Each structure stands twice: as C-alpha cells, then as structure tokens.
Length: 495
Image 1: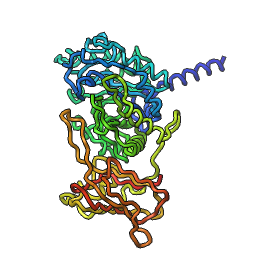
Image 2: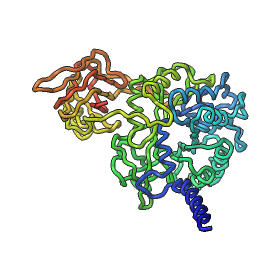
Image 3: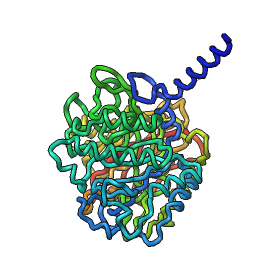
Image 4: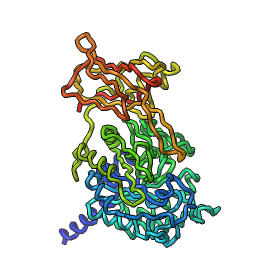
C-alpha cells in the first residue's frame, strides 16, 4: 500500500512539474516554457493578409474585404519551405493592425470568411505544421483599426473582443508554442489588461510563450521603450507590458552582451529576447506586387549567428506574394542558408566561433564631429548594432589591438549604410559609402596586407581565410568612399 501511495505521489509530482513555471515568476534562469523557446531558436515569420493586396505595410481597416483574393493560395508550400530551410517553428500573422483576420472569426466580418477566398489560413498552416513536424506560433495585433469596440471609451470592451478571438485561436487550432503581440503603443499599457489576457492564454495553453513588442522601458511607469543595445546590465530596466515571457523590439538587434534580468514591482525576472529580420533586402514585411531582392547569404548567415546567440531567438520574415505562394527566389535563398548553416532537426543551432576583437582597444584617424563618446573607434567593437564608429573624412583608418596569442580566420564587417525610406515608412533602400579598402595585420614588426578590395563593401562583408593568422593589431584602411565611412561592427573571429 505504501508503494502505491508513493507511486501516486510521484505521478502527481511529475504532472505538476510539467506545468510548474509556465507562468513567469521571479527567477534568474529560464522556466520550462522559456527553455523550450530558446531550444527552438529559429522560426519563419509569415506576414500575409489584406495588406498584401493593398501594397502597403500598414492599413487603417478600410481596405474592402473583397481585395483579399489570392489566386493560388498554398499554405502547405509555405510550411514545406520552412521545413526545407531548417526552421523549427512557423509564426503566422493572424491579424495585423487593420484588424483583418486570417480565420473565420464569429466576432467580425472583416476576415477571410467574408472574402472571395474563404480558406481558413490559420487552420491550413496549423495542419501543415503538424504534417512537416514544425511548431506553430501566432502573431496577433493588440491594435485593431476596424473593430467597433476598439473605439469604446471603456477599454475593457475591446479586451473582451480580444479575449474572445484569442479563445478561438487557442481552442480550435491545436498546440500553439508562441503568441506574439504587437501594436501596444496605441494605448496606455494598462488599457490592454495584460494580466487578464496572459492568464486566459495560459489557462488554455499553459506551455505557450507570450511576448509583447516594446516590452521593456528605461524607467518604471514611463513609456520610452528601451533599445536592445541598452540592455547590457541586469536589473536596470523595467517591464512596460507585464506579464511577458520574452522581450521584443521589432526590428532592432540585441547587443552581443544582452542581459536577461528585468524588474517589475521590485522583483527580478529572466526574459530572453526574440529578434525579427526580413529576408528582403529593403525590410519589407508584407509581400509586394513587384519582387524584391533578398539579402545576401553572407549577411543572413552573420545575422543568424548574432541573433540566436546568448540564449536568444530569431524569426525570419518570408512573406507570400499576391498569388498566395512564397516566391521561388526567396525560397531558394532561405533553403540555401539552411544548408550553409547545416541545420538539422533536434540538433543545437550552429554558432559563429570566438570573437577576439570584442571590446578591444581601438583608435581611428578621425571621428565625426570629434564626438568620441558617440562615434569613437571603440563603437566598432562594442558589440552593439545601434552604435558605430563614424569618420570625419572620406579617407580613414580604423586600428584595433589584438591578443597575438589568439588565432583568427574570419572577419565580418557590418558597415553603416545610408537608408532611403519609401512612402510606407518601413521599406528602405540601403547604399554603401565604402568603395575601396584594404585590411592589414601587424605581425613581427611589420604591416602585412591580408585582404584588398576595389568594390563596395556590401550589406555585410564576410572574409574567410584559408589559414589562421595571429597579430598584435589589425587595420582597416579605407581608400575610397562616397561619404565619410562608418562601421557598426568590425568582428575578428576564430571560426
């Protein structure tokens, strides 16, 4: 009998441990839900909806539902591409800011069921994820520019609407591993009643990780969102949206020294960061009528390494076009990236090797505006993508000291580029300043050139050497530029 009681107690303990920690609690380590999220690590983001047919990134809820009309809708193809590219999960934009829903919601007529193509996209993507062995995640905009209840003076009226729709999503479409909220800036944080919304989702699916864009602020009870580059000190910044299981600041890149401890009501919580990146060269989220070139494989590879490092995650946006399919050139690029990275199911994600230049002493021949604090040479090796060294002259040199005992065989350079934004305020066109340059190392009391190029630096310059070098210093010499050059990150790596 004692053995039977012990077995029952053990089963209860095992059962309770499976759900323990699913809601965020003060901690210095990831709970089971967060740990599973970090282990997934790499997901495909899918922006698709009425904006796809309105040729816009954001719309105000007035695009007629008849505009939504994919002629060759193929959700299976989307997920097949994700599988072939090595993604672990698919994150589907179920409702963007305009309020158009990709499922048949009984709480609105602004959805696919009222359109010419009535396919329940949420159902089809969920089904395809099961077929190809991927996890399913959903994006849901808090902001809704179509729902009448959103304009009600009582914010709880719209929270009711949200909870009704979230109940549909979390009871009708199987397991959902992640919920990605956006658009919170349109109201005060307390108007969203996140504790109520969070508890509802956790009740329906306790293992779902929940995040809200612009999660963290610099000061408690203020609304200035903290940039990821600032998040390099534990227990310094505060939740704007609580509770949340992970941090978001779309589309910024976290600091290489990203920290995980954030404060709410005087208590410290462990919170990983999820990155968002577009495969398109100009940061377009929704597919457009005209095809857009993809980012280079080198840039995508380096961003992958950066964003999945340090217990953080990455979702890569690959949008279907107006036919309802992912374009072949984008599918080819992301599948090629997966093969280059050697992604395998249930295997750890690959890493970038050892950075030997991070935080090394650096100097430059000139600094823009003589503002060393903002544009000094050290900003090129500080681990932050929102900081940069900027020269005052078009001909410039950046020199970094290295530990000569440490070898390296790779260099990656993120050049600051000029950006020309389109009318939608999101899509941008990047152009290089640096046109010709060389890289030299100081070894055995002399400078030796190890790389020379007379073409523009490109979106992300990656140089792989057939041998390892050791040097006490490395020097980037810019010999031709269209404007004073600037470098976000100059990384010397042993790969």
